[in-house]
Amino acid sequence: MTRAFNFSAGPAALPEEVLRQAQAEMLEWNGVGASIVEISHRSADFMAVAAQAEADLRTLVGIPDDYAVLFLGGGATTQQALVPLNFASPGQRVDYVVTGHWGKTAVRQAKPYVDVNIAADGGAGGFRDIPPVSQWRLSRDAAYVHVTANETIHGIEFRDMPDVGNVPLVADFSSSIASEPIDVSRYGVIYAGAQKNLGPVGIAVVIIRRDLLERAGQPRADIFDYRSHAARDSMLNTPPTWNWYMAGLMFKWMLAQGGVEAFAKLSQAKSALVYDAIDGSGGFYRNDVAAAVRSRMNIPFFLASEELDARFVSEAKKAGLLALKGHKAVGGIRASLYNAVPLEAAQALVAFMADFQKRNG
Ligand code: PMP
Image 1 (cartoon, rainbow, N blue to C red):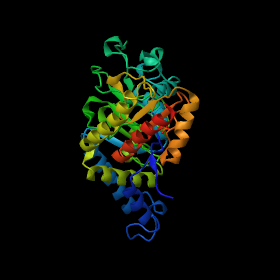
Image 2 (tube, helix red, strand yellow):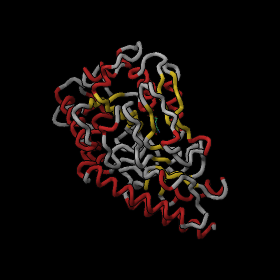
Image 3 (cartoon, rainbow, N blue to C red):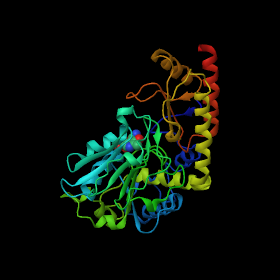
Image 4 (cartoon, helix red, strand yellow):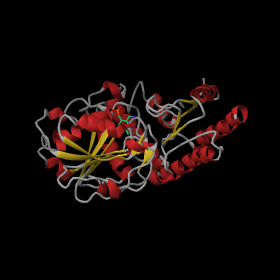
């Protein structure tokens, strides 16, 4: 069995170098006589790994010192509930810009705690575009504005993040973090589940402007309290040590590849190949997202029938192209092109697309 090209939306492909290093260190790590998942999270050995991972993430993403960085279990959905609990008072007005499935999930997680104003919603247009900021109905007194930087299922990405004034911008970067340079100082909070660009599923990264940690928020246990997690360096309880270590390996790998500038170029090249193949297919393949907001990370597309979609997915799998089935919410095909997916994978995909069209067009 050889490793195929993997277009999974998450848990997603990891670089072979990272997997090999983890494999080599699985039985015995760093001279401690045990693997990294068999030692205390409070041991000096693990604490060094944790601190190095944070330092490397700060370098990779360009996180200023006045931001705290947390490594937490619970994935991105948990952060969607913790954000209103920590940054808004009970029933306070908050603004959500909904540009796809994950924006809706964020709204659902927030609703029990706050007064959610849907400032903009691309749903009426079938999530094919981002409503222009001039049409957003932002509240003057919102605790924050929440956006989804990249919608993993609908394949919609903010290419220019709008200015929302003094209200802190909270952004779900789960499926696009570290894929291009971003100006962290424009955000109050950035969160991301690891399982796309940062490592295996099981940990989330939360980047918080420190002044926001002073907000009273809502009554909550300390395990749901970002301030408590920050005060204890994300070791309020036992953190997912394996995932933290693996994310650390990913950060080192991404830095060695040239950092976010290199991945910006690579993701531009990969996504252009696939979009050009779709747009140049004379309608055989279809992606309905407005060109200006097409995602570089997740490319959903459709053939003329569900039967043809299914044939495409199954033949692609036989050709060594994995996980191309679209999410059940939208159907069709989806190619995810995260940082660990090489240019060769996108080239193999477009070659397969051309061949499939020749045989079925
Ligand atoms: N936000 C986005 C943009 C996502 O893609 C996902 C998962 N695919 C989530 C949130 C939910 O993440 P998790 O499953 O880690 O809770």
